[in-house]
Length: 307
Image 1 (tube, rainbow, N blue to C red):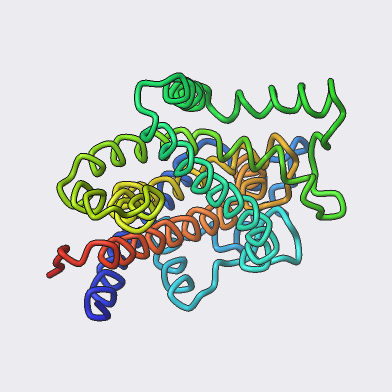
Image 2 (cartoon, rainbow, N blue to C red):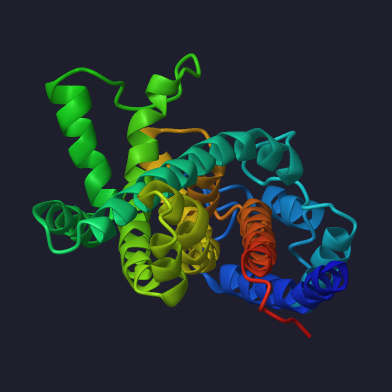
């Protein structure tokens, strides 16, 4: 297992390098520049700024310099946030994004697996149809539509929860953004769990367990749940990626000072190094999450063999 994990980790390096290359040249191909402010700078000042940030060098040379610095863990200075490096901005925003995304994934797993299991155990009942109808609604409505609707209902109309920001850091400020991020994932996980549970409950080893007189709760929790979780675990990698990228929009809607807001502001201001830093950091996280999912999958299913 350790050898497999090490091999996958080393194999991720070319993937990350391709991501860095594509992101670097796509960002530089976008119109505008980091010093295109409303009030034009004098030519000599702009020339000095471009020289200070090495933007006057050929693009290939800039790319080589960026990769070399990146290999040393240096994301470079931010063009927009003076006196701050991109590393410092990521360190400030990531804990907020991690708290938001982690809470959303935990909520999605707990609610999704529970709802899917209940729906499978009561197949074709009203409960089953209700769970599937809610799941379809959660899948159909994107979170950038759901978020304003939740704000309108729970913040503006009922006044139960704050509409945005993080305030004093209490949980009530996270409720609406976490629900907005978690709802689509709850829907997908519930549908996956239901389908997998129905298939597992028809298996011979479940019939054998029931024939031995084991309580239904023991059959479900001890024998059925582990194989049921296999497709759910496979989904967690893409789901985590969806939550991370989705948080870019949600953080902007709710005014949460996480990495997503830095990314949007960096893109609007053509802050090349900040956008690159967030993209590379997110890419590395997604690769890491997929690796962890593969390891958990192997633990759940010992029949899985890796080269």
